[in-house]
Length: 119
Image 1 (tube, one colour):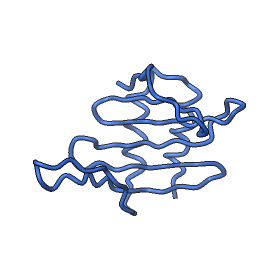
Image 2 (image 1 turned 45 degrees about the vertical axis):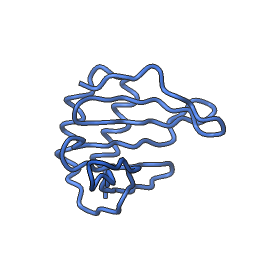
Image 3 (image 1 turned 45 degrees about the horizontal axis):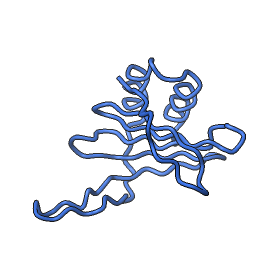
């Protein structure tokens, strides 16, 4: 079940953000100065083969595989996003809907709508 992290760092000069997590998803939501949602990043499949769908106003989508950069257990690297075109948006949308009923309805509706309408 998605729950909000309450103590996340806000980066000066960047959009305000909120962060929600569970075992399968990370959802980061960005806001404008007048408190409108301007985009989100939904990371999913976190424990096996992580992917990230990013949506930003006006209607820009990107889909990536998360390369954790950990090829050697003795080194810790910074994760990077690698383009990845395959996205089963209906399965992810359905799971998001089931896992998100405890977070703000405005966020759930927008993210779900963008997932369903992904092209």
